[in-house]
Amino acid sequence: MTQILVIGSEGQLGNEIQKLSKDIQEASFVFTSLETLDVTDSNKLDETVRNTNYDYIINCTAYTAVDKAEEDQNLAYEINAQALEVIGLASKAINAKVIHVSTDYVFDGCNHKPYIESDTTAPQSVYGKTKLKGEQLLMEKNHNSIVIRTSWLYSSHGNNFVKTMIKLGQERDELGIIFDQIGSPTYAGDLAKSIIHMVKSDIAQSIPFIAGIYHYSNEGVASWYDFARTIHKKKGIQCALKPIESKEYPTPAPRPHYSVMNKGKIKKAYQLTIPHWEDSLEHCLAELDIKQN
Ligand SMILES: NC(=O)c1ccc[n+]([C@@H]2O[C@H](COP(=O)([O-])OP(=O)(O)OC[C@H]3O[C@@H](n4cnc5c(N)ncnc54)[C@H](OP(=O)(O)O)[C@@H]3O)[C@@H](O)[C@H]2O)c1
Image 1 (tube, rainbow, N blue to C red):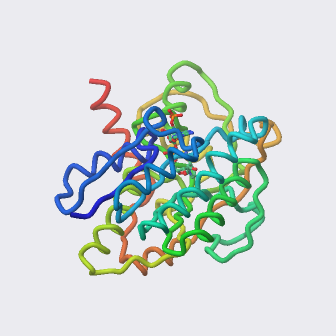
Image 2: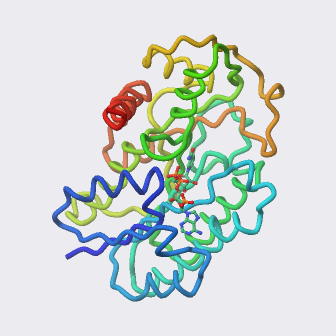
């Protein structure tokens, strides 16, 4: 039976992969979390990967606190970059294929059209720089790796923009939301489905595992202001939203002004139909309602 190791399975994406794994008969999954496998422990990470003949390693760990990373550079590097070198070497030794997730923050945001995979990277933050290094180290050590860059990830699990907007919208009468950063929201459930589809297609030999970098987000484009407005509208939250510029809300880590990614490559290679972000947002809100009741 196909053996799959999912590292960092208690995060937003990892949690969605766990949910989907229950319906997959053709593979057996092992899930690790920060508690059971801290990826900064290189020896343990190396041993965990090498000790079983895994066919696939899916890495969902990350140091995702974008602003905190500016001060916490070493830890961000260990988790987002160094661990990928270890995973790359160990997976290569057991001949396993790797699927790893990266970010739109590897770009500087100066484009005027959606980024393609071969566009020049120029990360502006420690988070973006360490994630880019992780991509490079993994692909250098194990050529049989897929890196999926995604953006504005959210789910019903963990902390994210959707949950923050619901909470703040219910607590306050007015909120200032940035309107000059444009990107594409991504529902972690959709990304998880696509990752599982890639693995299942390889197992079934219907679509082979095609190593390389891919871009993935939901369809459509939004500013954070548009995103917040839609969340409030769909939830019936009455809160005055004021569009503000990034310079009115300074953060330790600069964000790209434009980080829309072109998803043509992954859609064509894996015959994917990607939902629009507004439709996926509805799924997530419905799931949140179920959790609350
Ligand atoms: N979130 C976004 O907006 C966003 C945007 C673009 C790309 N991405 C990328 O998408 C991927 C998935 O993101 P996500 O939102 O699912 O992240 P997440 O919810 O923050 O999950 C990351 C997981 O990694 C775990 N982790 C942190 N340090 C670890 C360590 N030393 N050893 C083992 N596990 C560790 C975390 O555990 P704890 O929670 O216990 O710390 C958490 O369960 C990441 O590669 C991220 O860079 C995310």
